[in-house]
Amino acid sequence: MPAIDFEVERLYYPISEVADMLDVNPSLIRFWEKEFPQLAPRKNHRGNRQFTIKDIELLKRIHHLVKEKGFTLEGAKRFLRANKHEKPEAPSIIERLLGVREQLNSIALSL
Image 1 (cartoon, rainbow, N blue to C red):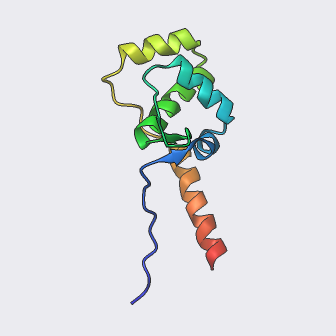
Image 2 (cartoon, helix red, strand yellow):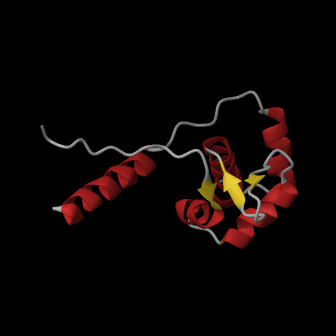
């Protein structure tokens, strides 16, 4: 029987991995944590931030509003407060394709 290779979604991600996902510095994520009260990652016994998928989705929304749409921080805060029940935008086709490319590259490297 061939081995099945699948990726298990983790419950928590460290700030370094989240920063890599968003292509930003960890310091920017820490800054956004202070500015956006709805962003409150859990901390472990050492004080390291542990981000959930929900936290990461919120960070993606903040990143999209501030970096891509040009919102000010205050404008992004108002937008998120006004649209807190709205589902976040679906990932763009480019994001999905980049994810597929990453998976294909890792498969190619393992061969």
